Amino acid sequence: MKASLDKLNCIFCGMCGGICSDVFRADFDGKSVAMDKELSGELLASAKYAEAVCPTWAITIGNSPVVGNLTI
Image (cartoon, rainbow, N blue to C red; front, side, top):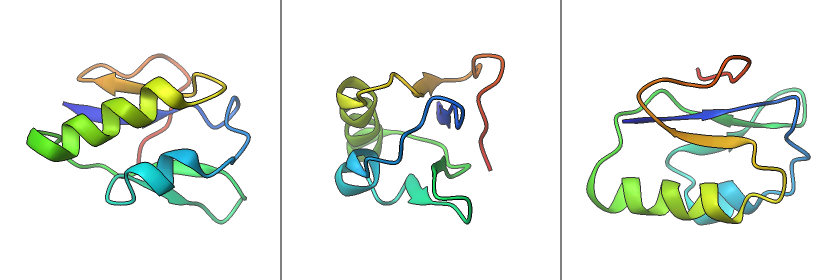
């Protein structure tokens, strides 16, 4: 499983990076970005928590990112 992040919805509140910095980072454009990593175990649990608390629902955890979401 991987994380994807819709940069159009991201307001860069920083919560995802604070919760799961191994997956979510700040990008050069002042938005968050999801790293291209396979998620399992504790990393998956942290990423799912970040998805749950994202105030704009910009994060998706799964194998098939939603159209418009970006992963790098």
